Image (cartoon, rainbow, N blue to C red; front, top):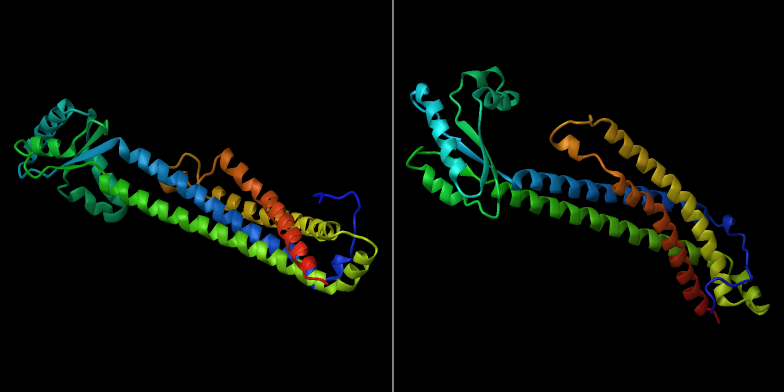
Length: 293
């Protein structure tokens, strides 16, 4: 049987209530699918940036000395020792003013009067860096100093991001399944409404594939109209969210922007919805026709 027969059969499908609602159903599904896919892409990008930013770094926390005059010399000694440690590519002491500025959003002006621990930022080669060995070497020099290689943060971010990505993709799959089921239901309802016309077409020699293509073409058109509308609403929502994120900002806002490849993937959602609608409609129509006497 040919996939697209030369002869066409046109039925007044627009008269069916189920067919009239089909563009709206597909539009809502495309809207939800686009937002779910965008969430998965953003989460994947954000997690990659977080992991990349933490993987090549580590931090040494040096408790504040009872004698403030000794603290700068102690920090300098720690930086010198860390620089010689295998796997450490860079060691830089963070100024006290920078530490206070980091705490200011939570503590306000009170952060200026606190005896804060000194921080040393390390750039490391993760394949050669051993945080435990550095911790052991630092203990005699600076008792109480703590080496944090961010491993706990990296593992936590990876697990959380992976879980959220799986949830977003699961929602995407469920939306697709509901859309396919809705198209199949609409087609079967339309065929039931036009059963007399279908029987007449059978009597004059129309094949099942020809009749099924008539319903599939209508589903394709309805899905295309609804898909474009739903995608337009989703794109407007994503653009509005992105417009609130200032360019060049650090942290989470900068990670919420999507690049060109992401938009290409999002643009494919209406086309995929139309193809799935056509396939679902044709299969549902053929299954219905096989049940006729």
